[in-house]
Image 1 (cartoon, each protein chain N blue to C red):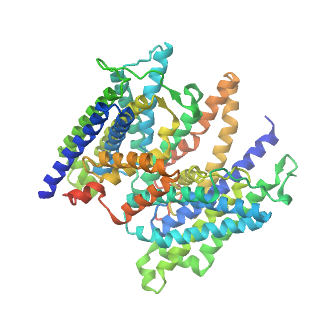
Image 2 (image 1 turned 60 degrees about the horizontal axis):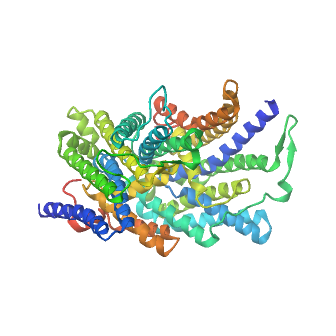
Image 3 (image 1 turned 135 degrees about the vertical axis):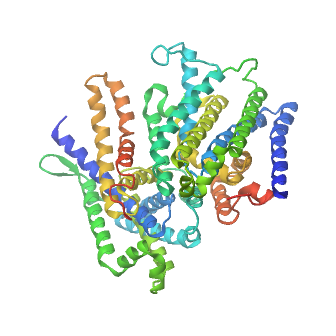
Length: 326
Length: 305
């Protein structure tokens, strides 16, 4: 139990740090640092989505970038039509309301996750990894070659979408939105992990046959987990597009899927705040080493390789001890 | 649309499929024998292409370049097997994915450091330039050579696995690794050999394709993902499945890109038809994969049925 309390304290500390650093940057007027923290919060949110499937459910999806990108395209396409005052399709208008965009992004990501999940969850293990990767690649190539929304060049969002009562063009306001959403998503993750559904999901990861033997259908539980996971990552994608005011097929690329997995592993698989730590490490690594050498990915690869080979459990595992179960 | 053009595209599809087979064969062998998913297989393809292009440019001889590419890929394969991959056999697939993802980062940046940030160009050897008359159509001699080479390597691989002592050990390793270790086969050395063999095949494919594409960092991963599609369609661990899957993917992808825009042009205006056709064509093989998954979740030729 001591380890458990230590993890709680560590989590509170991490949340406070993620809020304090940009707050300080806001006070001394360093907008770059605020935007960096916003990036960490949004990437962490995408990671929380994947953590639900991968960490709790043991579903190693190598294609979560597709939901991230789809969310991004929801923001981009809806804003594009609102900006040009043209209908999206069949008389439906675009919108620049963030809240509406988020709902659309989650609905479509959930739908896509349901379709991809229904097919890929027929298999498991190595097949599942390859198939989720392949399906993500399919939509990547579709976005790349579909000419209506910029294709390869991507789609700019000229004016950041609006949030009731806040000027989203201000970095601090955008950060607060991202931070609050991250905390909400983390709360949802904690609730799911503590629920009966979460228990079933984790039990299936450990032994699907035994779960089936007590009368729970593993397929349905896994699919539900996979859909929620895709929805969260899609929401993060919509917010990321708004942060960078740009969406392109690269949001769906396999490297993005890889990065999402890396975020979870660096932080600690299945840990509540694992994705937050992982996203902070990844973004920090890119900023610090990217400034020193253009070959920073080489060193990232070496660090990652060492973590996988020698430091299983990630950063939180290192500081807070081993996980209670699993 | 003439018959000649159609035949040419069909041959292109077969050629593409055979190169995919060289990639998939190594992947599926490594999975079948060692139970390992290797994302860095695309990097070995890239290494083959880069060393081939660099050696060919330095010596002025394509065949020396090809040897260099083959040897470099096999050596790189053996090296990473001994240093990294060997530690992953008993790990779960997630660790394998991550470690080999890290290897992609390391190898891609390593190649960029070694050869510089710009693409290299590799010319086909002089005697293989130009076209050959197939009666119904003129066809690129180099691509035709790729088809012949691909078939030859496939037959060689089949002979190796079905007819030699090493092949017996590989097949035994797929079935029961403890038993063949108990019978005195050095299983560690066998794994290194199998991995290097797969790496050599990937390097060969990279070097051969390097002469019809530009040789650049990141060239391996799109092919790697296609090879995954091939393996999912063919059945993991099956060389025969890899062959059938590779030819299916190669031909359907090439023909889709050729025919779909023309099909849409019959009722859409030309620029729109190009866009829609190209976008849908790029999805075709994944639809095929989904279809196979629904009908045969273990692939067309499941190896461990």
